[in-house]
Image (cartoon, rainbow over all chains, first blue to last red; front, side, top):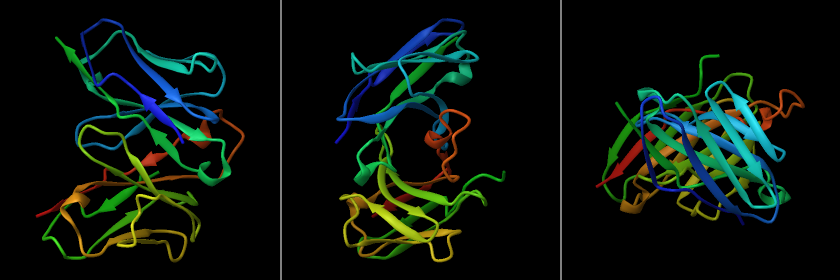
Length: 113
Length: 120
């Protein structure tokens, strides 16, 4: 099976940079995904890392290191609207569960003015 | 792209009653997922459909839970004899057939806003 660990809460001020870490235990996976969820809203896809390294999408970047079983989401130039929960997720290589995403428990980001 | 829609948004029921939720995925998406989410936790996988075939079910899905996707379009999730522990947000997600590009497309699920179930 898979397990993913994230900090439960992170607080930062508007305009700052924040990093949300994700450590995982899995016997094999396709890649690491990140989703954002505002209170009462639907989770929305942010980014995906299939390979080690950094992927950049606007103000958001995501990083993966398979050798360290670690990834992170980097949010730059924080805005108030970035206050939300952020989830890392993996999809197993094993055929019995390859179609499902397994999510971490999420990190609640609070952006202060 | 009208998005994934779920109905109802909220459902309050008494313990022991049956409830049914509906999900309408994005029209061209042949893959449909049900997830459950409790406060402060990430979504937990319940079941997966490819077209009308239910191909994966989680061990979380007790025999009180049943899901269908009869024509490969909308799906329903029924919970029989609800228990207080069933109180959660039930999320539906969909995605299209596997594609090679863009990178990450097969990892991108489109979620609905969910049905919040409260069992009293």
